[in-house]
Image (cartoon, rainbow, N blue to C red; front, side, top):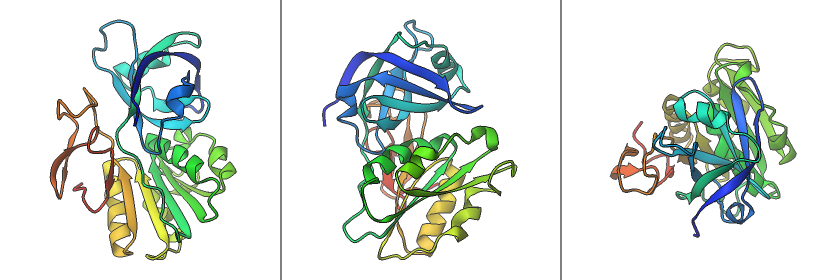
Length: 256
């Protein structure tokens, strides 16, 4: 799979809800190479501060490459200040990708938490023309963390939302939504990305119901190429890097 490092023009960098921003890049060539679940590594400023690039799951990859982010740390706050027309140094696409559901799959359930919903958006784009039932279960801290999910609906997804404070959707964690779906171990596929406690709950749910589940794991990365080992996670096969071995793993392998 071809990886590209280049400077790409920012076409939009907008706040799409009180907590989240969406960055759009004129990167058509890279967009053609992106698979669902992959990420890009962005140098957010022209200076040495912050020194390391920042990893972002690809949110959409059509005519542009888009990423979703929350401005919470030094890197993402700096990124939020970048303007359309400026250029960003991007490396990507990186990492492995979700395996699309096998033939015979009748139901795909995507379970996302917070900013972890990003790789599920591009996955839903890949599944848009599939005739299987598509469901998104989305958990957020509050209404301010819930952006417009209409693009999931356009892709044919049924959408259910839970918030920790009950300000939007069902009151509680995303696990409160598990009773919204009826699964079949022979024909249901689960995909998930989000905070570790949420994915631990998804792992328990998938194991109890004998469901295949792929998890995209998020960790702080430095090199994003498997060299520094800084993003290693514990698995049943030993420590593995999320940047090079992942970020997508069979959830049975991941030790949360």
